[in-house]
Length: 387
Image (cartoon, rainbow, N blue to C red):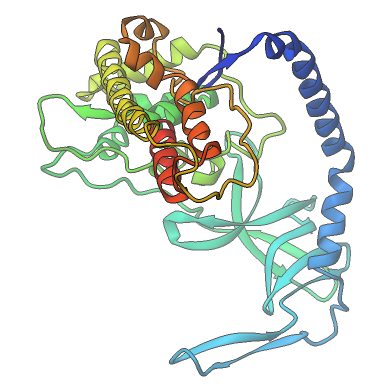
């Protein structure tokens, strides 16, 4: 048996698969290179074709190709009747429309300083609304404003007061966002794009606990983390920008010193009394999860062994053609220690290998298992990985 460590599983390759693996890797690399090159070369053409199809041009002086009408199905509601989306040219600028209102994108718009640029509509979470925004001068990344449509041009006017973030209040139950938002040192370090991305990933992916407290409020998903980071940076970004590697730059930021930034984040959180699991705690949790998955597989194996006592052809034929061998067990996670496999009993080694799946498929091929029984056992087998 030859094992290949992948991101989530260990693949069990036979000799032929092992010999042909370099060829397949080269094929994948060539295909990806061709795809990326095609994306760069034809991106503008695809975008233009999409806009021509979804947002066809109309005369700016023509009436709208639709109107709002009363929706009888919803009390007090209304719906748009007619063409929903289109584009118009107004002087040197172009703008998209949806349901009678400017929407989504505008190109070659006149800015307050006289320059021309493309602007886009974006969700402003703090105000629970949408606003137009343009590229700003550093240290800002985006500036928000409104569009003024004239007879011969479109003008972008900056808002007198840019959208701002309000931190949640401190309460009796500790809240990690409220405490981080009041750390001036943390806010200062967040201005570094690399640290901001590292903070986003670690705060989203790790479990954080308030030292000395049983009850506390941590982040509820990556969206909350991104929302806080965007607000504390005060650069005009939204949570979507943070989630997509600080979008809006010519090149995404690179984290060149991950260990340094990870330690810096730990320092900031320790200073306000928060911590995550230690390495030993994480290792113990992973091993416990490994044992639980293994126990579930052993139960499936014992049921398969029981079904193997049936005589061939005892069930109706339902398998149209033999299933191909998967060649992998779909059992090991990337974080699992391969050394754990050496401590398994003979039964557990079979349960954690691809042999379990092959034996289940053999039951179907020899008509010793019904389709319902097969589907249930196969789902339980793969749920030990995906579940």
